[in-house]
Every structure is written in C-alpha cells, then in structure tokens.
Length: 139
Image 1 (tube, one colour):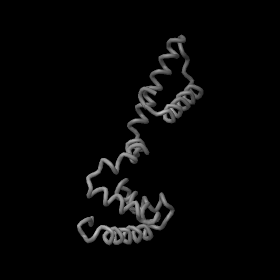
Image 2 (cartoon, one colour):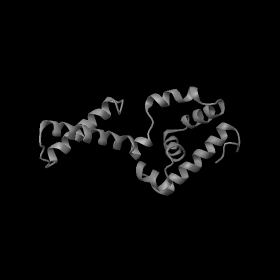
Image 3 (tube, one colour):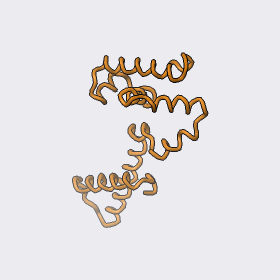
Image 4 (cartoon, helix red, strand yellow):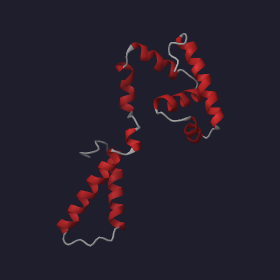
C-alpha cells in the first residue's frame, strides 16, 4: 500500500505474489529467508506495476475530474467540444488525440474497420471545426 497508494492495485499485487509463491519451487532456509523472499518479490511486483505501459498510459478518475478547472479557458472550450460529440465520435477522438492510438489500433479496440475509424475521425474533426468556429484548432 505504501508503494501503490491504491487498495485495488495492492490486492492485485497480493494475489500475484502469492501465486508466485505457490507456483515456485524455492526451498527456503528459514522463516526469515521466506519473509525476505516475500518482501523482495512484493517490492519488485509493485515496481513492475508502477513502470508498466498500462499504468503510464492511464489517468485516474480523480485527475480527470480536476482537469477542467486546471485547464486554460481555450483548452476548456476544446475539451467541452470533444465531450459534446456523439459517443462514436468522442471515443475515436479521445483514443487518437489523448491516448495517441493509431487508426488501426483504434479499430482493434473498438471492433471497427480501419476505414470506418478514418471516416469517424474526419467527421469528428469537421464537427469540432464547426463548434469551435473555424480552422484555428485544426491538427
């Protein structure tokens, strides 16, 4: 809990470490050796989770809720425009511009054809241009 600061992640690490323990064939010399093994494996599992791709590419809900108040007025307007798009457009815009996924990756994630993703991105850009008033937000 000290490393992760998140109860759910702590439970996941707890399960992972005990699964490693059950599946390992390590013979411990003493209870102290076993305790040290648990501590070392737990710390390593926590470090692995903290530096994982998934962890570095996600944002907590608390951070998202604080986001609009921390943004400059111009960025708030863009965020509000993106959030006002219909869901199918909002999803592809979010995945493409905020999570940096490519159209083929978005197609795999959403179960859509790549050309459909390109079409949704094009249409969503047009909708955003109309909502934001011109080409100044293009790109």
